[in-house]
Image (cartoon, rainbow over all chains, first blue to last red):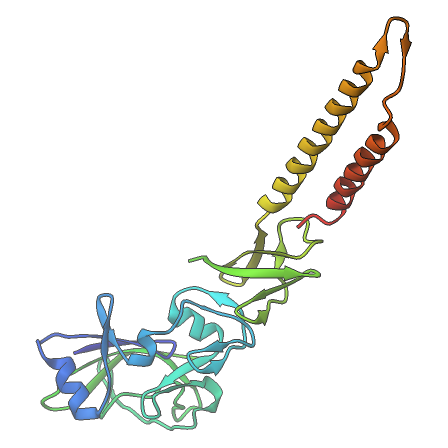
Length: 146
Length: 113
């Protein structure tokens, strides 16, 4: 399975048939199809615009903006919390991470919550990750920070 | 990608989905209340009013005035006999009605959407 986290928005793509169903069962998640990828149910219905002081996927938007959902989330400083299954302000995420460095990236067990803070106090904003649901080792690359 | 949404404009305030949009650029006159569309392109917001009601009302008033003027001249013509012309008995009220229509047009001009 390949996953792209774009400013707190997730795109999952299967490498082997049935991975999405297995992921949903294993992590009690709700991935659904949107375009050429899968994403969490709340993100699948995320609008491509936000209105300042209006609701955006259940939270009050801080900016009027039109673009792709991940661009709207970035502009509003929102990320998706897959544990709480809701959008959160980036700055409200207090999760700490300390991924193990690899020759070409990092490895960790499980998905990194966007907005998480690394040991140098930088917030993870975007990343790519590839994992195999058999060994549950997540290989991260292209981590970018807010 | 730009997004177009239904909106209204009252007293220069553009409202969309119940939210007042600060910073919206109104592309029409924006004096009278109107409904229309807001176009959001990244951070830029434009409001476009449906101005066809303005145009329709204006044209209706112009047709009405033209008809009244035509009727007035017809009445004046009917009163022409040889060298003399007797004004039609409705002259004053006909002129008054035309003036009233012109006043409405003036008001429309000052409250364009």
